[in-house]
Image 1 (cartoon, rainbow, N blue to C red):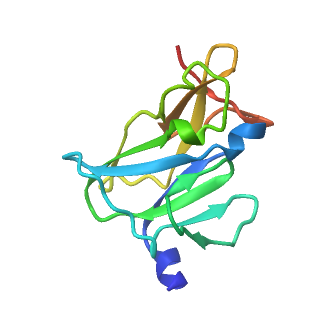
Image 2 (image 1 turned 30 degrees about the vertical axis):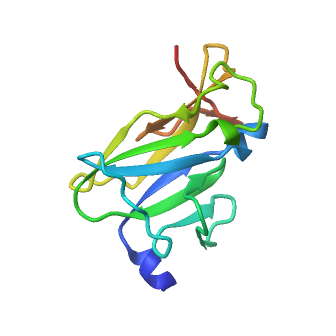
Amino acid sequence: MLYAICSASALIIYRPINDGYMNEIPCYIKVEDEEGNEIKLNRETVWYEWVEKPGYWYLYKKSFYLKGGMAIHIPFNPGRYKITVYTPKDKQFGVECANKREDWVSNEFVYDTNYPLNVIFVAPTSNENYFYNGGWVIDNRAPKFFIYTRPKITS
């Protein structure tokens, strides 16, 4: 079964390492089709890895999420998909930020299997002073990096 998982064409969603406590805050993955219907991910074909432990793959047991330093591999059937990540209020673990009373939700990233990417990236958002402000951004370009991933500045 692992051979089938590893050889399948998959999109990798990578959340690089953040600093300190942000690594432990999960962002959950939501995939929808073009009509907005949620796609149920298959626990037998979706797997993750810790980037600092190359060559070790793990199957999810419950929710599909990312923490700092994790990458998820999702096989897709042909089509267009909308991908978002979010962190509910109760999973923010008391982080002080501007958006602490709301769910943290990313932008909507459209993935088209006709123009496949290998990897997309997830990073937290911040204000202009690099204080986390409670959000996520998905991009096809790697976030800026200096010791840790720099959060994406939003207004």
